[in-house]
Amino acid sequence: MPEPVYRAAIVAGKLVFAALGLRVRVEGAERLPASGPVILASNHVSFPDFLFLGDALLPTRRRVRFLCRADIWDSPVARAMEAMRHVPVDRAAPAAAYLQARGLLREGEVVCAFPEAGISAAYVVRALMPGAVALARETGAPLLPVTVWGGQRLWPQRRTADGPFPRPTPSRGRLVDVRVHAPLPVARDADLTEVTRRLGHVLQDGLESVQRLPGHRPRAGEPAPWYPAHLGGDAVERTASYALDAMPRWAVAPTWGPGSLV
Image (cartoon, rainbow, N blue to C red; front, side, top):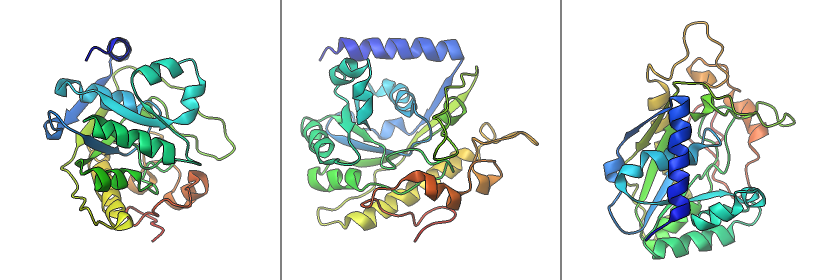
């Protein structure tokens, strides 16, 4: 189906990536089925993560419909977001986003959720919303965990609750890694909390495996507020980040990573 707005966004993104000398390296894209409904559940480390994921999956020739913050629809790009069939998520009332995502899956679309519903200042997978698992349980669509890392060097998270959102820090030659992991089984009678916890462990393990790669580690003596403290960086400590993460009451608390709540 022709999607001129989506095509134009892809071209614009490629031009920006080329201007920045940005490399998006992908592993596991072949795990994405060639047709039929799919749920991608990605960790979230930078505001433009959806651009990196979309670029990484272009060779599959499948369009991805992203669940994004509802306030983006209050900006000048609202009409483009609608045309690309992305889904606005109101964290205070997420039911409408769930229903819209379910409808897309029933049409055979690829839907990508960021279950953390935000970015942790610790760059460790934070509490997860159970919606992605619930969609997989209800629709039977395969649930593929996805790791993304590297975008925080271009647009980091703020370090204090009352601080302003950081501005982009475009630097040439950055590397972003995207890894698509094996499908996570979700039975029709699955316990949402239990499977969401399994998803959290997969996302955290996948994130740390990429964070430890030589191309992503800080140099000796380099200040690294963009790298997790438990791996030797200068990001906010995991336990301190809980005061900044604003977890919704229905989110599943972490049993994964350093300083877990459970």
